[in-house]
Length: 86
Image (tube, helix red, strand yellow):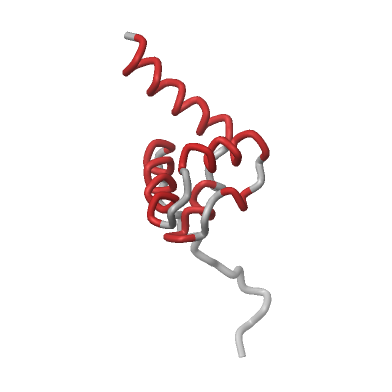
């Protein structure tokens, strides 16, 4: 039996950081594959915070919940401004 007075060590495995644009892309693809209107579903999620707007297909719901909703909106707006207004 181990001596319980010894210091215990454990290793934390860090998940690789995923970018907001990658999350949006993966969520968009998953919603499209399931036959949903991805824009309406993503807007519904951003506005309400209700994760059930996002399908669990391909782990999309878990991915989108790892990103703050304001970051999703910021990324979408930034893309629109850079590609449509400039």
